[in-house]
Image (cartoon, rainbow over all chains, first blue to last red; front, side, top):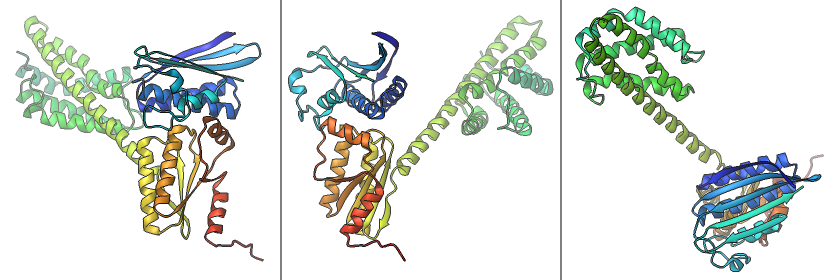
Length: 134
Length: 285
């Protein structure tokens, strides 16, 4: 597996969520994802970017265009230095929210992508990695 | 002291012609000259006018007091200039260069005048430099403000644009949503829709999301709240424009839209609305 290209952009305020979505859209088209998969990845990116802004107090989105044999993929990493998630298992429960949302952002994002990993500890920020392959 | 001496002001006034010619040449070289957006006559009158207000301001006052009354004419002129430049779509560098490219011709003029008098020369160069810097900064500041005004106006316009509530039929309203649905916009959309339901006594409101590129949980939450509010008003809501990729995404996200009538396109939603209102559409013979 090799990385074709990579980059990063800040996700600090609400407007950045829109920009993150646009970047995800551009990259997923370039990656050659089908329309349904594009929409899924963009939606997942939207959820995670908003989480980083609202709960993480702002962070970054790193992206990598990957190549693995004939397959190509797009990996997005959302990281923030916020308060972290005390109970990851609880956070990954459908319908649970610490804010005012529907409680489907994290779990929904996991169902929308091929690979999903969440690293977080109280006080150590949060890092969510998602990946979608063609 | 950093005021322009009377001698300097006199020499500027006396050499207006050559000064203007050399300023124009400098503007050309810095790429800040006029293009098709400004006519030659307008451009020349602007440079001439600026030299006049500069000399007039300098004759009256101290260079340090840029905020004072002596400079109000120069300030007004520059504000007008940078505002028109901003509206014409020039960038800030272009606008600032209008002022800064006068430095070189002015210094040359001073050098010719004070060549044998280094102390006076230095003090006058310093004064002119301070003066032009101050005026240049003022120009950029005004320019930026004008641009911000343009942006703010466009944002307002977008907010208006995104909320047209249209009457499709007697008792049927439609709201075609376009673009990003953030909290502020959804609020405006919801308010105007509910208001129109009251005004028209509509029984069915169709929310069309064909133009919404991404439906994530926040957008869904906004939609659910809007639908609930519509129902509380005694009307019914139909969501149309659910494209295949959006439908699949909603399923994976785990969003529950059960209990809400959804349709793939606006035509289907209108058909449902007409049927419920008891209308029958027939093809003429």
